[in-house]
Amino acid sequence: MTGTGPPLDDRPSGTGPAEPEEPIWRRDFPYTTAGEDEVTRREFVRYMVLGSGAFALGTVGVAGLTSLREPARGEPRPVVERGRLRPGEAYLFRYPSEDDPAILLLRPDGELRAFNQKCTHLGCVVYLDADADELVCPCHEGGFSATTGDVLYGPPERPLPRIAVEVRDGLVWAVGVEDG
Ligand code: FES
Image (cartoon, rainbow, N blue to C red):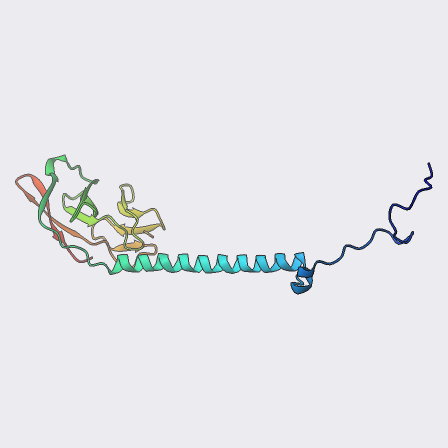
């Protein structure tokens, strides 16, 4: 059907649709979409790097404070009846405060040993691997002697702090924290 009325728009025929006029803000801020994405990505990476760096520094700081903290010496107090212990087994307790996990060992030769249970690397708790007869830290595969607390392998650089124990009237007493 052909119309005879006035044309619907006055564009010259054959030139296609009119180009939309560029907004004024685009002239003042001539960033393309791709350019804007690139800036955002770059900023994102920068924030990621800064965030990771801050996290790493925080971790090192906490580890440093933990290792610098002077261990409490502790007051003598009873831990467990000597008769409840079996050779080659461990008994867990807390000493010198309720915030300090500790491990008491009755060695196969009948000697008693006790250590602070926090690994001297980053503070995970160690456990007795009875088969290997070692105190093992599961966090980064550190290992300590179950007899002396000395480092056997892994990242720890200091032995486990030792807790002096003695038997009084059938009870094992913890009597103080020794230097590691
Ligand atoms: S915390 Fe024990 S080896 Fe790292």
